[in-house]
Image (cartoon, rainbow, N blue to C red; front, side, top):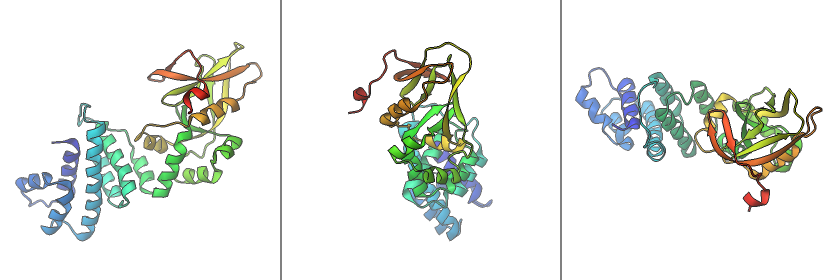
Length: 290
């Protein structure tokens, strides 16, 4: 049985079928198409109208998740090891209240991703997600092109002049902080002369060229995402605004006292664990921005 169908069948069996229902009946319902399971259960008296509403929403999400899984994870070896059934019950309870189609698409990606790799999405992330509106999700996605990897997390460079130039408003960041996507803590991203990578996206790395050898670190201010924000970004590839990356390179401090630093962007050749490998030639803006 396909993974999505197995999860749907397990939830229906646990939550909506009474103890006097035969095993044959359960298997028949599990084999029913997603679109008609809720109708069948309601007609046969297994669920109430309120339960029907939640189940119908969940099944629409499950159907979308089935397509996501086939397109993105079908070739991966699937295992039930590490799967937390209580997580899926929590997912059912929360997603059952989501009727907006665009938000259902997001929930579907979460479901498919969790089945493909158990433990990818925490219950805390489900808590954040269930309180997001469509407008919240769209705002988060619109700002995601300005995010990059740094200091072991995903961050937004904290620079009011750049934010004004690119139309990033403090009120937007404050709102997404209230939504649980940005951390209220405002730290500095730190790197040292041995690592050289100041930050990176999925395709491009900013390399620090440090002229004076000395101990210590270099730091710059950032808005970090929460763990829930990071997990929600996993559902799609992080597409960076390259023009913004070049603007960051020009805005980063080059005189840090003991160190004279210059920065350049390079094409990433490989990422292995926490180690980023890049090409020798610096990228030029005109080469990658048409």
